[in-house]
Structure formats: structure tokens, C-alpha cells
Image 1 (cartoon, rainbow, N blue to C red):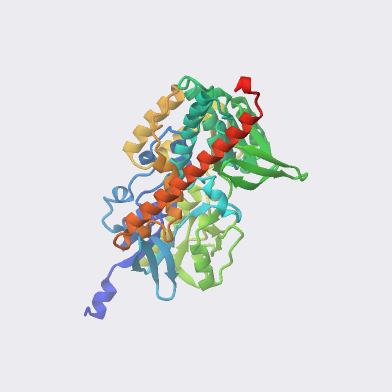
Image 2: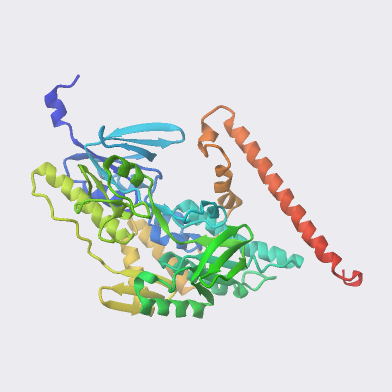
Length: 493
């Protein structure tokens, strides 16, 4: 047994939850502090989330925006990385509990930085996610890439057979914030410019791209002037912008929306992208129950001005999880908050005076619409067009992690923006259906590895389910074809 003196000399243990902007920058900011840092995250990579839409539309590879966390932190001797999704925090015992594929790990801490981020919110309609993936993870982006490029392939096949393909060449993006605007603009550019020579039976320039939102304007945080400018630029690209319409239903073949005057309309579309709304990590609720700190409607937790929890000065919460001074859910809030927390932890251990309350420095907001088109808001400055686009490129290039990723991203941007190619157009059926297949297992991927024979049983079940779905789709197609043929004179059949 170690002596009390040896225990006192043990390094201060800092646990960081999450590998996003808050988790990564918080960990790196502690590299010179007298601490041992353990980062616990449910993925093995650091995700540059603002560029997910470029993975979905074939501009960048996933590796360029999601470098391995271990590689990024390999030179930081006081940091280690553990894979696992944190499911519990015990503030009294100062431990966190994480799980991965049925394996539980308990980690002790002296100081805790919670940077678990946020997930996509469907406003209580989580079943929409089966047909309209969000834009919060690499899995989402790769699935959307498969759906988008797959829709053109299925349209080409259908056109050769003489089928109605309008629903295949209609793309709906829900949410007119920066992510939705960027996604709609890139799908339009993909259809009208990149793919226009690649198909024979369809004209990709006839594809409909619809941007839908219940808000009265595009890019609400950017103000009315920039919002109107962005809307005009989108419409020049051929994007149909529908505002003031709330999504009320989503299924495999379409999306239903309701206007403020009570009107209900349905759009037939196979490819839907959900870019509306976020909800903070469920850990916010766990922390709230133990501290009494309030939660807002998005699940964000109220924190003290120094980003700590009431009654627990050793616990810092940063990024998308906090409700403080109406701070936006953007990367810079997470980065600055994490650096503040790391500095405070270091200061306590080295005898420095506490910092003042956390103050966020707003470096501005930007959104790209398409090549050479963007909007930027920096302080009182409002920019549009090529200048804003170049600023967007420069800022995002700076914050991409790793020299290698910056170089390859720059080359891919040159190919996509100066030329008309997309370097990352490879898609597979697995990308599209893996998520829904795993969702049908009782415990997800855990069922594939937890028991002998479970993998074979799960695979057989998924194959049976997929076969039944294909048979049902074939029967429905035959029924529709037969009903259509009965209405056509025999001599025209």
C-alpha cells in the first residue's frame, strides 16, 4: 500500500469528456501543466464538424476532417486516450463511467472537463432520422454521400426503364442555418455542374434542390441583409427556398410540411437531409440532477460565470452543452471555453490567482453558398461574394488539424472549386443501410460481439429483413406498374 505522502505526490488527474473542439483544445492546453490527462470519447477521431457537408457531397475525404485523436496527441506525454461513450458521472465519488461494445470502464478524476457536445434534434420526432439523416458525425456524412450519389444512379436506371424519376431527382434540405445553406448550395452545384456530363438517360441539371425552414429568413443569426443576400444567391444556383413551413411528417418517399396559414403540402423525394436543430448531450441532464443546475429547452446546462457547476468547482462544462449569456453553439465557444478551463486548472495547481468570469470573443460567422459565393459577419463588417469566400477558405484551412490534412484539403478544393471534379465520389450500399441495420439489433453493435454465434444470428436476421424489404418493394412496383398498364389502351402497351 502506498504511503499518504506518496498519494499526495501523485499527479493531479484531469478527465476530459469528448474529442471535439472543446475536448481536443482543452487537452492540448494542459500539455505543460503538472497533470495527467485522460480523454474519454466515443470516437477515435477529432471531427472538424463544419466541413461534414463537404464529405457528404464528395469534396473531401473523411480522413481530412477527422484525424485520429491518438495521432494528434501522440507528442503530448501527459495525455492518454480511452475509447468509450460516457454514460454516467458520479460527482460525489469523482468518477465517470464509459461503455464500448458492452465493456465498462470507470475513470477517476480530480478535475473534470465536460465537452460532450450536441446531437441532432428532431424536435421530438426521432423517427424522422430513419429517412432524413442529420449532419453530426462521419457516419451521417458517409450515409448521405451514398444517398445523394445513389439517387442519381437510381434515376439513371429508372429513366432507362421509362419510370417516373422525379422523386429521385428531388433533394430536400431541412434547416436554413449555415449547415443547411452550405449543403443545399453544394448539392445544386453537384447536379448542375459536376455531374452534368456523366449520365446519359437523365439531365442532372433538372434536379430540384429545396431548402426548407420554419423560420422567416435564411441564416437567421446573420441578420436580415445577409440572409436576403444568401437567399438570392441560392436561387441563382437553382435552389428553391421555402420559408415559414414546418415539417410535420417524413417517410421513405417524401416529406410533409405545414404553413402558418394551415396549408399542408407534400414533396415527393427520396433524399432528405436534416440540418435543423441541435440537442445537448444527455450528460447535461445527469449533471443537472446531481447539482440542481437548470436545463434549457435544448438540454444545455446552466453554469457559473467561470464555467463550473454549482457546488462543484472541480467540474467545468464547455461548448455546446452550456447555457450562459446566450452563447452560440459554435466551435469558437468550445475552443475558448476549454482553454479557459485548462488555464484555471493549471493556475490552481501552481498557486495563481483565479481568472475573472469567462468572456467569449466573437471572431465572426461565415457561411459558404457555393464556389466564389459566401457571406461573412465579422464585428460590424458585412461581406459577401468572392472576398467572403476567400476569408472562409482561409479560416477553415487554419483550423483543420494537421499539416497533411491542410495540404490535401487545399488540393481537393482546387479540384472542386476551380475545376468541376469531386475526388470522393465512392459510395457503397453498406454506407446507406448499415445504420438502420444496426438499429434493428436489440443492443446495436454490442449484439455482434458479446456472445458466441451472435454475429451469425444477427447477420441472418438482417439478411432476412433486407430480403423481405426488397420483395415488398418489388411487389409494390409491380402493383403500380400493373395499375398503370390497365389505364393504357392495349395498342399502346
